[in-house]
Image (cartoon, rainbow, N blue to C red):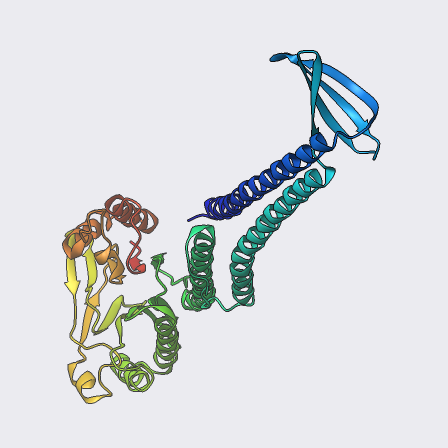
Length: 440
């Protein structure tokens, strides 16, 4: 029950009890006083009538309408007492009898009785009001103490007040507020951690992305990178080598978040260092695997597709470390697209023997006008609004349709294909495309 109805009900009940008792008391006392007054008046009237007192002053007189033969006089006796004298003409003589007036003591007694009853009613109302105030103020003080606990940061604290009415509603509201504050704090903490993670990953991603594409005489090298909404370690790399050759590398890293970004940064550093130290592509990849296997935790891995170009001859040496998307070579002469996908497992799965045995090399020769294309898994895995993936076949067809165009137009065509398919759906993985065309 709410505070208003409770207050009204308690006050009404208390006043009914007090007024009921007072009514019975007034009735009983008034009856007793009236009976006593009648008895005193009768006795004194008989005595005065019998004694025939001496009247010293007739203060006021009047006739009695209901009894024409009776006259009434307000008189003062010789003793100073004021009484009513009634006279009745009986033949030639007048018969008098006397009735004493009501004493002031009886009126004062009745007034005192009414005053006492009024005082009791006021005291009862004050007592009930104080009790109701205690019923309200006590729980409210406990609620205030609970709110102070929450304000100090103890969002797990819950209100101790139980009951009904507005106080219970307030207690439930405070509990909901505490729960919402706890959720908000947790969300804020997660957001803060997420923000720091995004900032760190953005820094790592910036470090993984080449600032510029190297210029190689006779070749047009370009790259296109469309980042996803996730924190990933995927990267691509142009690595100029000491003997004039240049390596093109595209890598996918398992997992998301900071661990994936750090593994990607580590793998990039190892690949750049090892490729620059030797002209043995297979040896460089084996050493990268050995070093990376000790750094990645179980279940994490890095795939790579590597192509090392010898500019003068147009010969390209190709190696694959578990990369799922094959390297594509477009032949300008017959306008055909060919897949090149040598064997190999990803970095980090094995410390050496299995990786070394499985690693294979392939070689292609680029003629003028030919194009070489490396891509990450991102383009293949983009999804439309219904969750369907683009897939390898559609991706390869898009490459085949655009491969004969200039490189800038070629990359724009591939980007348009992805955007038309996804219709603004977020990418699951980074979309990285590296292409190299030998100029005619």
